[in-house]
Image (cartoon, rainbow, N blue to C red):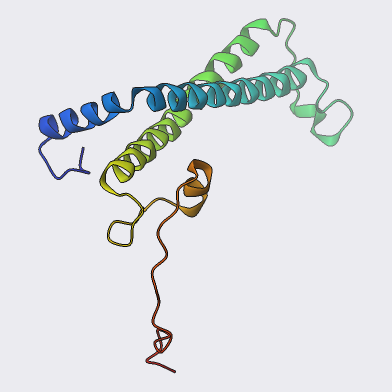
Length: 153
């Protein structure tokens, strides 16, 4: 919304229409990002619940010096359920921040494509890697050979 330098409602409207004009790209990027974040959530929840089970069951620190810190629990289901729910909530909060960053970069990318055409007068401002993925290029600018950026030295 602050991309446009407008008030909240008019900036949100401009962003909405930008996303509406690029609905196909929006769906593809949104679904790919959602899938990657979902897999990441599954990995984190799986690792924390697996390590939690190994700790609660006594396998993790079995015959080490840390065995005295091992809890004596007969039913690991309730603590394991708490670990699973807690790790899912925490990883969801962290991934929502990442998802907001993806959405912001995507909105800037769409604005760059609409405002610029890659010419010398209006070059793209996106990263070189993103231009390579899209097959876009900035027009090369003829450089003056006598100036090297250090006062001609």
